[in-house]
Length: 313
Image (tube, rainbow, N blue to C red; front, side):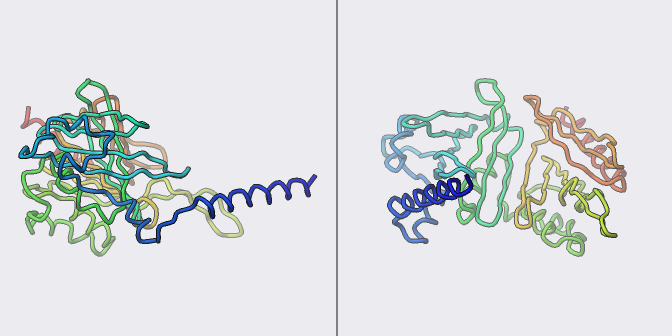
């Protein structure tokens, strides 16, 4: 029985190996890597055929073509994704997702984007958009690409975050508010500075180290489980920014415009933990955990948020 199983496994392996050798990639490593890069689409002529009908109004020369980026398809079973195209039409962000020989369009009004997430793990990156579509439905779109091309997305991110200025225009006084983090976690200090937009003012910020709980003790050694990764929460005069660690090499940024937050609250949980909850339209809820020692800081953040939202009403 065992020998039959071994023979079968060897046969299957030979099939996989022969298929790869026969049909595997013919490009060199550099060219294969470039296939994962996002690309700027600057005219109707360079739009992939499957998406052309969406851009018919810009077929004629002389018309201002919208800022548009094409993200590649990723084959395989780990993170498969299809080709996508994202463009900025004045007050809208439109995402076109390829479906065979056609596509599906998701149109988000800038005013109704609930949050934008940005993740980078080494060279693997994605941007996630969540919000209400023009059809009045809760929608979510994720665009994956090689982080080498992440600067292409800065104009789109600035637009979705409704920025008044560029990333480079951040006041030195605002960057200095994270100086104290350098002794605790230099990486998060740099991530926090990178997250700010020009003209933005930081009102409250808190850095939470990894929260671990003991699982069991064996031979005098205690083993732990991670309840929450290292993360930070930042309140500015226009948004809430969340930054959290994603594995040893990755970071996730999430940007929540204040005007689209339904409720912001905190509640005590088991294991002496405090949960900060962000409630968004479409019944979307995200939670961030903090140690009990952060209670006063989180309540100050809540008070500052309430003061901001009260002024805008």
